[in-house]
Length: 337
Image 1: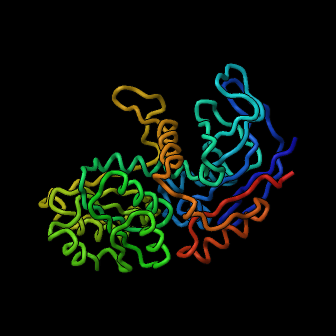
Image 2: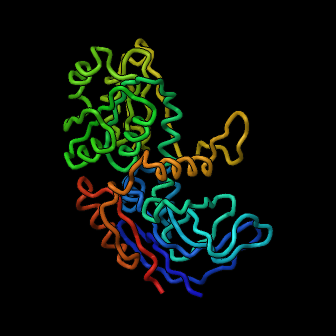
Image 3: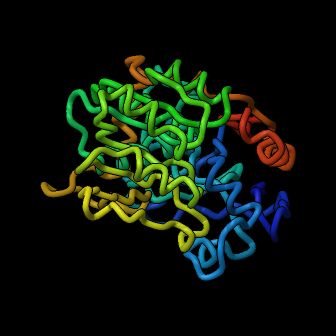
């Protein structure tokens, strides 16, 4: 049996690679992929190699590089010792863009019947955003600012609404993104930069500024503006890993204003749940699916288009050319023989 995988072989170089399919080992599951979601921010940074030398990005993106980490597929076979999973079950996995993939059984999350393949592909991003939302330690009635309305920013807006935010101010220069954010629960949208938004945020919050500010841009230039939008003793959450972190600088009033700056990253959740840290990736994925099934979150509106996986090069080209107007791009593996 032959596999087809997407591989980055160099900067802005993509190859569809034919490889043999390996049998699952102990504790592993072999999955035939249905759909995968391109994580726009991360994968475009990797594809364009848009990061500084010496960063963790530089150490991570080594060629050949297999992109992707949000897939939906069917279990084909299970290795020894696997319990609770059988051939035919539909699961969500953190596996790359490929027709077949091996995953550890404990990393597979069964998808409820009332969640579609297209919706389920968003589960990995849904988990990443949960990490940031938990780190923010929201209180009922918080005034929240979200800077950067890409995939993660859109989900932040929806989670902030679920957490009972009073104001959710969405900031992004792209009006198409702001329109999506308003549908997701943003109470105000500002098509300006973060540094220009302080007056508007003061007016909306009665002069207090925001309790929680999310910088979801992944761009170092947005960080000072984000700090300026947080109230005294407020929180700024970095939920966008900048490719050039050495260009992110604190403003001179961070200490005197008592700001709390929190970094949130996909690697933070525990592998095994405990009383002290119970929210594993699998548990967060199940919660995300619960919200989708109840209609409390909506990712269908965020899905822009779906490409045959064999046309992946066109999908990445579209994202680079029209980044501000294209949101969720899916790859369909069901037509691959």
